[in-house]
Image (tube, rainbow, N blue to C red):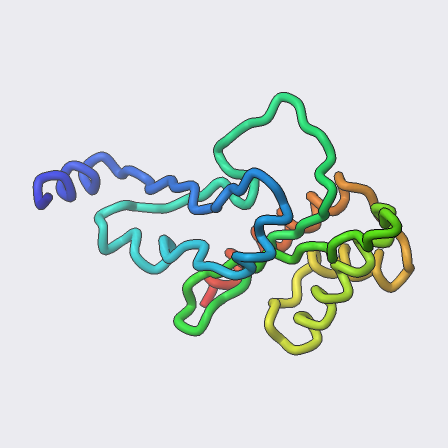
Length: 165
């Protein structure tokens, strides 16, 4: 192990991990709503690496084609108690038995929970989160591309806050 650490340090290697738990369906995150995302920003130097990286919340798995899932899900990172990075999976409520909710209705219900977390101070204030909350305040569905943009912006800004401390 000592030789491996010396080799890593000598070559200036960066630790790259994919800590995101990918589940086959968004609804499965209801049973696993919160988890540790990473501690790499706290431990990479102790392991001999000169830097670290992750795949954000996109995962290293690339999907050529996709299909809309019945449930909307937002994966938002936040600093935990010991400055580790945690991820909370916000999932839209299940459709009522007699009707199917629209994407807009699902988004507004989902982002209402995010808004509660933000107001309680559990999520850091970021421009990405502000982008999502603005759509909620305007009572509109911004589209999946804008939602994805907001989540990734939030991740990068949260990492920047952790690293600047």
